[in-house]
Length: 381
Ligand SMILES: Cc1ncc(COP(=O)(O)O)c(C=O)c1O
Image (tube, rainbow, N blue to C red; front, side, top):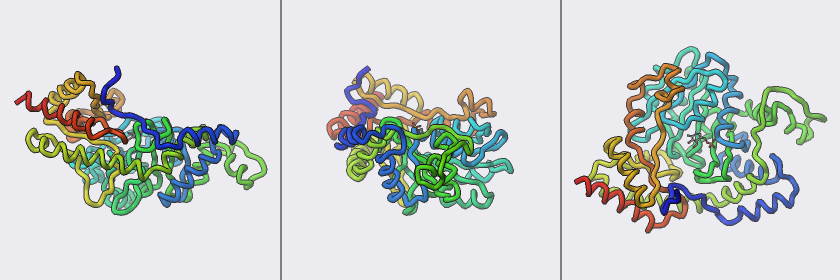
């Protein structure tokens, strides 16, 4: 079904097609060509990280993280139940047992105050997710992780160039993972990046990404032939995608400004409704610079959330919910997940609604969305 106001619309910034044609003209269509190099250089410079590798997705950057940390069967990995399935699958694929943490009521991020009691001698990683591009309480998380010698992998799918106390999200743990999926602020359709903050992991990351070979060293002239040196897979995106991505990365400031405007307009338009109808708006702590990745609202109940989605749909407006608590999914239950384990996650997951959000969403379209939400509540008295 085509929606008058879709949930997401990929937005071009101008140079995508020209750069893709240039990639074709350069005759290097596979991974690690000129545009991959440019993207990595830009990301590395802006993030100030020792290593950045483009990957085929954030999912694959997470899988590389699990490989780099040598996760083996029986290891435990702590992560929020309120996240996308890739956060957990990457580690479960290596045989890890997920340990699900609840989230904070304000930012919907991993609740750092409940972390200590989840740590056991088998904990091998903590994976905070910077939900909606708003930083988790990283000081407390990093302190606890350091006290126990546990690596931290930041799932930063939503938070490229967001900051926590002035520091770039994705650069605070040993590893950070980015997404360039169509729904993200900066996109190439499908894509991602692994941010490597521990210099000791950079060389092995290159090898894992190149099918377990030292091909990258060979191309730098550091070895005279390349060969199989480790396990690995193929996590390189084509340089055609990197060309598209480079155009988007170069235009990041204007993308952010457009999204900031859309986010602020929603906030201003929805504030009076929130007070009247018990809707909760996003909370952004003063020490976090957010990425304006999404605008969500919390409805009073599951029933009102579902009814509002249906009402918006009848008027051609697509609003969506996510995430279903992972600990209560079919897979989560096989790891012992039970109702009541993560009470805030369970409640928020029922009440959260994401409104249409894309760079060029117009003020008129936003007015329509907000008027429809308003009518919905007025009609219910
Ligand atoms: C928190 C989180 N992590 C990981 C991913 C996976 O990203 P990708 O589609 O690039 O694999 C997503 C996708 O939406 C996500 O929301």
